[in-house]
Image (cartoon, rainbow, N blue to C red; front, side, top):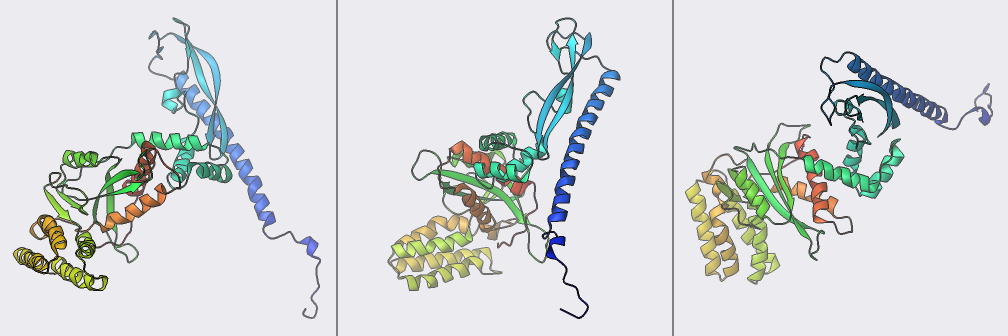
Length: 391
């Protein structure tokens, strides 16, 4: 202690942050109370002005009569992230059939079944598509002044998924398609999720290359739905990993160059090539597929020579693999407009898909489809992505 300093008793100090924390809590409660009161008053005032200054008659939904009289107000309680807000809606009675109804419900967005405001539902959906429903409900209860059950979160996601429609305008775009298994349905190995996105290069953001991706299809089940979708939107350029035949689904179909090289390792193993010797064959194929500034006929000739050399060396399975893929391996050389010739941009989305689907339990096929559809719609169709990618 320095000369002249006085050791003050600790009891005169509050513990760290208590004053501002308590003040903030008190003001939040006062603000929420004022918000609820002001919100209710404005909604009521709007209806009074509307009812008094209406230019068109109010017609009864039953008999169509226009002779109505005021019948007071009815209370409606809405759940919001700021707590429960009580509103009052105007009631009228038809003098013809004596029915009492609320003519401004539809215009106000207060349908009979409505219990939550959209802002609260949006928060619940944003949580529910990323973490389990029960955990989402707990977080909503702890971090907001509203409550919703796990089943309520599931229902809201299903409702949102039902309202989503994908864009039909993909003319000139490159479509990347892929599939993966998730633990869903009755089959032991699960169900197949089929995903298709368009991808093109975007502007530089924070020194990184950006890729703009748009979701054009997602379904759980057969790939027939994906193929039908590609034909419906008249896809021009499709890139895939070779797991399915898409030759009749687009004008130009390109095999993913990365997968061609990666898959060759498996076929070399089937041909008995030792692990340490497989890389040389893969490097040779990689040079053929990625060699810059080579003409199309030169690339095709080099690939044919490589396939023949595999056959002459007794590597029949590896040669068969490349011969089957040869027709779609070098399409990008002859056709301009391919923004990507690998499915690399889509693999990032597949990792996100598997991360959400792997919850340690078995989904229903429709349940996981709803979650993934909303997840990727919000992730790709309503946001700007910044990701590194390779052609």
